[in-house]
Image (tube, rainbow, N blue to C red; front, side, top):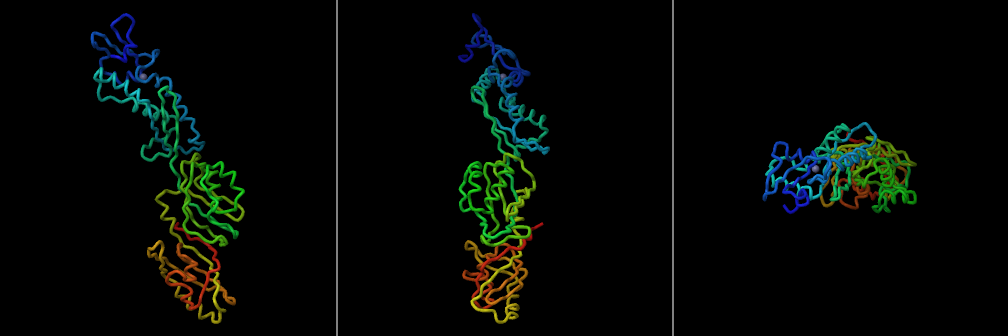
Length: 384
Ligand SMILES: [Zn+2]
């Protein structure tokens, strides 16, 4: 009774508890709405003038502003494509306490709680207005509404991560794949720094993804690497980008052309990463020998033994890949130029020199010391 004293009518034994139509409807639709306790008559009054005992007029005063804030969120973007959403709320403990107090006094059981009703109302208004679907498990946008004791509130929106299959083409020599200077920074600092640094593929990727999706962060996964001086031609080497909490929906496919670098991006599902991570490459390998080439046809015939399985160790695990085709393109003095069609992932320098265990390797096959000077990727044959 203590916390109801304030509601006692002047000079009487009556207490009136004002409830807004929402809190009233949720609790009293079919129940009696007055009782006598300690010879005080307590009655529930449905009102829109007085402050609701349970929700402090949240439903009438604050909820429309919350809905409006979500509706005008820039996360919806301006595209016609409507995302799936979910909305969660955190409400002041006082709301539960007040509702529990009334419910135990009037012995109300099994009706909808205040938080459930708030969630339902907000979701329903957004769903109708935006014509979007609610998805509790894996929504594209998740809104978190936090309501404070003084009924001020905040709305925070997180977007589901996007996965991109990227490919890069490197038309000029001297561009590193990874950015050695890269230190995690917020996007603004990064943008300021971007032009001051040495050009790299990573830098171009980050710049493109940032301007297209404006994410909180991103994670790049490479599918192998080549030298700074190697070219990557044809359809380009694949890589993956996990775009974390993108603030812009961005396009499904994108092509970026820069000086000596071409980037392609395409949205894919997380479960497609393994599929696109396996591919074949067509490589030109430039080899230096310990001696001048004397018998080309001998080399040519020996080289056929390179086709088939290649076995090597990666992180102490035996790994097997395939070579589909080998051709000696050119032999001048102590230099060879080879063309190979192979699975991605074969360590090419190791395969030529054989300094670390690999079976077969060019040095052993040709019975002379070979060294890979550099290699270029002519094309990438991606899983369709
Ligand atoms: Zn209320």
